[in-house]
Image (cartoon, rainbow, N blue to C red; front, side):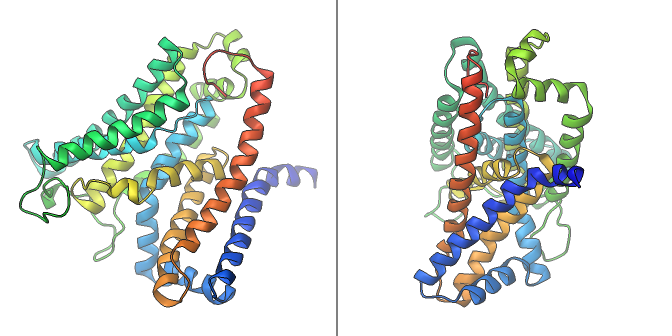
Length: 355
């Protein structure tokens, strides 16, 4: 009995957070003049009501899963990487440029574009880690500020030197990639592409890496007790740069698969307005940095977003009810996470931003 309780104990907080979010959403539905059960039924139909909607939800969850896995890995190592939006933007931009200008067969360009996205996101993330290790620049602040630089720089490129003049003049975007470079769809006529399988496989790989390998043990030790890790001979600086590259690389991969599998070009503001990166970070927090839990949490949050679109189509309740539920989730999770962060900081006066 006690063993069973210990097994399910980590699920209590995420389940409680979801219930609180749904209760707050119910209150918002009542205030908007809707009926709770009808609205939630429409939300379910909008997310899973048909095979097309299921594939739409899974396609939307793909970049969220990848960003969430990167954030979860950094959290496990004790580093709070909030630069996923910028890392995702650079990953998407690098994939677009590689897809447009690298010569060769389509399959080779596609692989090169994916690798370019990983490399771009990873290097952008490592820069923040280097600032922390070399100059003690707070990682929270540097990763946040680098997001603005990445967004504005990419916006400038697709607004001027790389702008597609043959497309819509109202949108700043690069030229469209050749169809031979696109990621293949899993089902004909459906939006789900092979990037979802990559994301699901990576969730399993990272789970095994953290649980069953020496590197995973060192990552967990550094995140759980930085001083003990230091006494155990773990080089914090090296581990930080490695963890930040891995985390940023996954965010960059999220941007790359979104370009290669869904948008087929870089569109200014498309990644930030869809909120993939922050939703991915929320998925990691909701799952308490468990990779498999992050996968499920990302699908759940994507379902909230696609389901909210169905609610707006079929009821008088506005689309924003899904955002209200997510905001309640963030509030509940952030309170617990901030408390844990504060407890660890009280117990450790270590240098830098390790938590």
